[in-house]
Structures are given as structure tokens and as C-alpha cells.
Length: 476
Image (cartoon, rainbow, N blue to C red; front, side, top):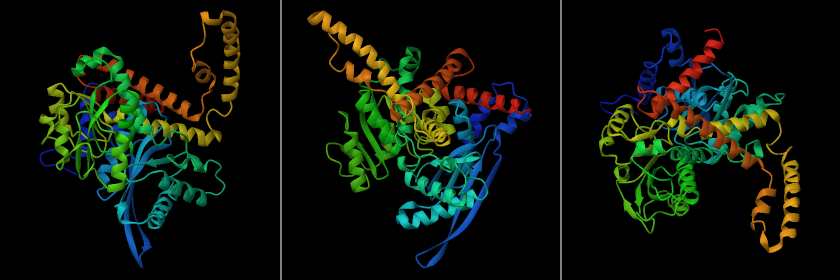
């Protein structure tokens, strides 16, 4: 959606790209090659529903094939259009480069309101869409690998994977054609929570460096920080849940479609999520103040603001009134280019979307590797790791027996140390490592270059350099 006097989402992405490349020394031809979208396929297909044929319009855009396969989600929303899909595909290119996932960028979308159809109808629509894409190799384990996005989830990915397998009965790697699948269909532990978990790890890394915290005007650690979340879907819910339960943050506000709830003493995130599932919104939620004009809560006093739903929610009409000193973009493009300028001039620190929500594609990468290797993570080494740890425990136990009351092991040390890492622990470890290293690469540019004033520009510089290096290696 284009707002009055503001660039569209796609124009915003291009403007942010241009701001970064102006600080680089790229040949004009290579700069253009990285910026433009390679190809967009538009499909219009019919499905017989409710006694008549309904025609649907879908897209699959491939932004860059500097690495293959290309990767990117498929979203179901009435507002899906070619410009949005191409902008999201570009973001995926930069995102994958930033977190060193070996993919080019892609994105897909279907113009549909999934709430208007029952499960059987959605399956028919999804399978037909998958068929149209797969027969053109726009779903393929080694060429184009979709994932869930807004309006889709594990269920839709399972349908797509099954449709591809039906069309390619001898492809041993068929399950790797799509990620975000349920565990029993080739998925990976920790994928559902991955984007929200990535937001948590991003904030943890931000608060590890006093220089970063000082730039935002905050102090201390995550513990006690007041958080407002816009959108308590999969990403917003998991981010809010982990930050409040594991890091001591206080979620004071939640913004949803029908309004917002606010409690300065803190909200029970699980309870709010459960209420939304049962009532379709936050209205009527007890122990909190209901705010009918939910968007006004974006301007409420807090330490950390997490827009986790739609594009453009922070724009020229409200940016000047946003009080949060730190914003982390859990959604794609929640801050318009105009609002980004306003916030930067105010000194607001923004952890950009291409990094902040990269947890999803990172764990999707792990799932793709798992599908290609045909073995779950941890299966080969877990018990050997436990046996090796048992040797240390046995020696410590001998020392414990010898010294008696003078020294003893902590009560839960033995259980924790003996437990070998399973798939979930390994996925979380890999995600944490990825988010740390990617943030550190941005931080280095942010602090070391006088001409880089914000993390978004730093993120673009890091990722564009990596894409340019890939193209040069190909001889371009």
C-alpha cells in the first residue's frame, strides 16, 4: 500500500539500497545487476469451489541468483501485489547474504483472504498454486525453496511438499523443496519459534555492547525493559514470550487488529495470546486497559518497540511521536523510508528487518540441510557426547566421595552436564551463533565508519558487499 506523500514499500527498499551503494565503490553495471529483480512469474489459475470456478492470482519473484537455490516465503493476503513481492524478494537476497545462508532471494504471494475459505478449500487452492509453480521449477530443492510467511504456516508447507513429491516421484530430495514443514513431514525442531527466537537473540547481542546501548540512550541489560509489541502473531508472540519469560523484559502493550491492551505493570503474554485465539482480538481482555485506536500505542512511552506484523505501520504521520529509543523490526518493512529519516534524526536506534527477522530463514536453512542429508541433527553424536561427559561426572563423583562435606557438585549440575544436545538445542545454538556473527558484522561497520550513521545502512553495506563478491566470483 502506498501512503500519501510517501514512497511505496518497493520504493523504500530501493531508496535504502541507493543510500548504501552511494557509500560503496561498485561499478555502475554491477550495482544495477544487484538492485534489479531477475524475474517475476504471474500465474492466474482456476479452482472449482462451491459449485463454480474461482480464479486466483499468484506471484513468484526471483530477485537474485548469485547463489542457488533462491529462498523466500509465500504469503496469503488480499493485498498481495507484484511490487510488494519484488520488494520482499530483494530483502530476502540481502537478508540471506547478511546471515550467510547460501541462497539467493525470492518471494511468493497469493491474492487471497485465507479466512474466507475452509481447510479443504485452502488445500485445493494451495495444491493448484504449488502445481503451477513447480512445473516451472519455481518450487524445486535445488532451484527455488519457499517457506511460510504471512497467512501461511506448517499446514500449507506440508501440502506444497506433498504436491511436489506427487509430481516428482523419483526425486529423493523432494522434501527439501520447501521449508517450514511440520516435524512429521520433514520439518525441524524450533522452526515455528525461529523468527521470534531470532528477535530475542538480536536484542541480547545488542545489549552485550555498552556502546550500542549508550547510542540508544538506554542503560543496563534487557531485564526490566518495557516492551510494546505490534502484532501478536507467530513472530510477535514468540518474541514477546521469550523476552518476558527468559530475559526479564516487561511487555506493557500489545497491538492487534481490533485495538490494543496496555498494562504498565506488564501483561501475561501467554494469556493475551490465548484470549486472541478464543475471541479473535484483544477486546475484553481482563487486567489491562483496552485502547480502541490500537495504533496510538506505537507512540506510548516504552524502551523497546517491536513492530511484528505489517509494512508501513510507522510512517510520516506518526514517526515524530514515536517515543521508543530502540525499535527492532520483527516484520518486513514496518518503517517507511520517510519515517526512517525522521527517527534517525531523532536519534532512535533501529535494528533493521533484514537482520532482525532473519531467524526464520536461518532455521529454514538448517531444515533444508537436514532434508538433503536425510538425518536429524544430533542423531549420530548425542549419546557419544553423553558418554564422554559421563567420564567427567564419574571422576567428579570420586572427588565428591573423597572430600565429603568439604565439597560437592551443585544439585542439578550432573543432569544438565550429562544431557547431550538434541535437534532443538543444536538449532537454537546455530541460530544464536548466526544472529551474533551477523550483528557483529553490522556493528563493526556502524562504529568504525564515520559515514555510516545507522544499523540499516550498515546491514545493506555488509550484504551488498557479499552479493557483489558472489557475482564477481561468477565472472561478472
